[in-house]
Image 1 (cartoon, rainbow, N blue to C red):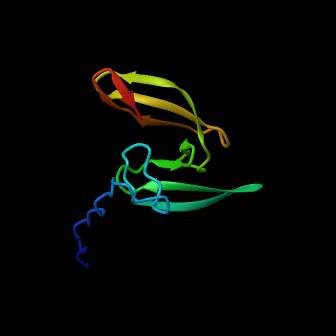
Image 2 (tube, rainbow, N blue to C red):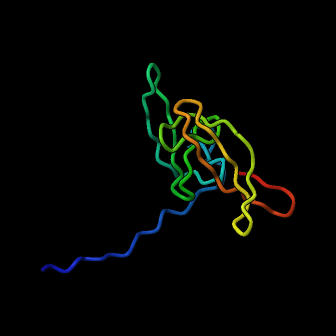
Length: 113
């Protein structure tokens, strides 16, 4: 039997939250990180571009939160207060109907996704 070679995970590159200019990558609307993976998805009859942030892992497009299943924009259904866990924003995908939630960052009375 062979031993498994377990290597440590490499950390993601530090996020550049500064201004990258007009030609720079779009910042993540959730954490501001400019390091993300760009995916091109086809949803007949159109092509849709979505991004996955390398820092927080959220999917987004140029319009805001995107469905992790198909990449289409999500419709905000409302906010959910999970006692002991925090506030979440609940979305439904406009294309496939998949529901997804995103944890909200709350400082005092103000919350944002």
